Amino acid sequence: MEVIEAAPYGGIVSVKATIAVVREDGPHWEVTDCDLIEFIVEAAPAFGRAVAFDQRE
Image (cartoon, rainbow, N blue to C red):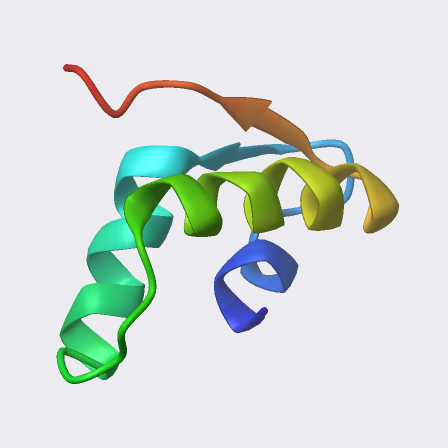
């Protein structure tokens, strides 16, 4: 959640960067990238942020 809130209001949340931070903070968590993307897609707009689908870059 902190990664999403760190982006300025009206800013863009990077899927790639958000997943990287989650993996770094909790490498033992058993959550898939698809689950994380779903969470980002739901949470970012709720906090006034857009989503950049840049995970393939």
